[in-house]
Length: 111
Length: 116
Image (tube, rainbow over all chains, first blue to last red; front, side, top):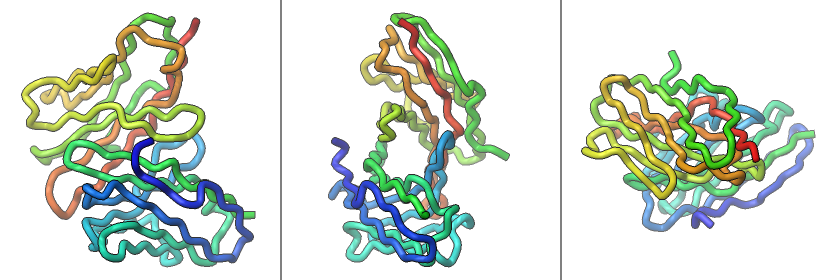
C-alpha cells in the first residue's frame, strides 16, 4: 500500500457521458500528478498541482478534461462527453522531494 | 526529441543472474531527478529507486541499484540476484528542476522476463 488511493478502481461508461475520478494523496506531499496510460505504453503526463495550484496542463489534454485540487488535499479529474479514445488507465501520483508514489489507478472503459 | 530513452523493449534473463536495464535521458537543466518503477501484470506502479543529479553516490535500495553516469546522461537500473517475481515492465522517469517545469516524464519501458 503506497498510501495513495484512487476511486473508483474501474469505471465503465457510455460514450458521451461525464465521469469523475478522485485521488487522495499522501498528506505530507504537496505535489499531485495525473497520468494516463494505455496498454503497452508508459504513463503520459496530463497535469499536476502544487498544493491547490494547477501548474501545468499537457497539450494532450483537451477541453473536455478538467482537474481540481480544492484546499490542496484530494484531487478530482473529470472527463466530459467521453469518447472511446479516452479508454485508458488513469493514474495519480503523490510526489515528495525524492519519491513519487502512485495509486492503483482507475481503469476507464468507454463503450 | 525523446527525453527518456529505454532501448530494450524486452529482455530475458536467467533466474539468479544480475540484470541491467538501460536508461538514457536528455536535459540541459543541471538540477533533475531520476526514478525507476516496476509495473507487474497487475498494473500498479511500484516506486523502486530515486537518484538526484547532485547526489554524490549512486542510489541503492536492497537488490536495486542505480548506475548513474552523469556525463553520459545514463541511469541504468541494476537488479542483483534476479527472482521470478522480478518479471514485470520497468519504467525510467525524469523530473527536471525548476518550479515551473517540474513534470515527471516516462520512457517507453522495458519488459523483463525472468526464466526459471
